[in-house]
Image (cartoon, rainbow, N blue to C red):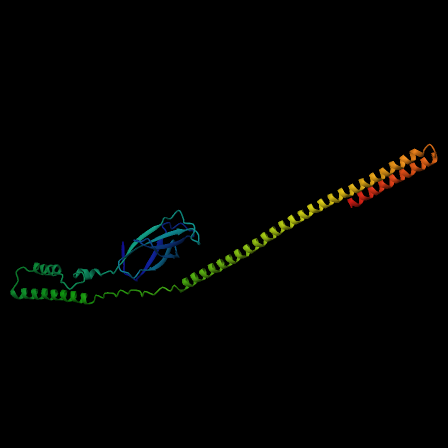
Length: 304
């Protein structure tokens, strides 16, 4: 796992391992937070030729962020069909401040002196001593002291040159929910309008049903009234028919009675006046025919 300074630009490189493959490919890099699996960025790499694809990623500012980069090879520019020859490659990183190794050799960035290095210098210089005069020993000790002093000065200088980068925390901006609240209010207004229109439609429907019911009741009343009047008309016609028939029968009986009287009178005089008998028969037939016509006329008038 590689350690990268926060807010530094990290190169992303994918090299295809088959130099003889001249097929056109497209490479996409997906950066994820290794702990939360949240995708931090998706970037399409640029074809640099010879199977090399390049891009970059700006490391998150937070110190101690673990993230990984997965590169995928596609056979189309729309990045919809992943190639089956080249597998995915994944590299993990740690976004954290890196301290120089030379500072670590001088006490890991603190103000302590590296006594091991001083001891080694002294041992090397003492190892050179054989049989020397006091002047020679003094020169050797002086040289060793100078080297020791220089090592101490270098350590202090290295510590003073250390620059601790300032960690910048992005300004937290207040989220503006105005658009969301406006959309919610519009939805509420639309619901209220639909509710009002529904209630108005219900009122109209109820009025229509009431009108239809009234029409139906009126129709039933009219039908009952028509049927009643029809019954009355039939009853009246039957009564008139009975009366007409009674009158016709009565008149017929009257004619019959008169005819019988005429016949009786004629019979008494038949022997005396034979021609008168014939005349009486003729008159009787005419009277009977007139009675029959009168009855037929009454029946026709009744039918009309």
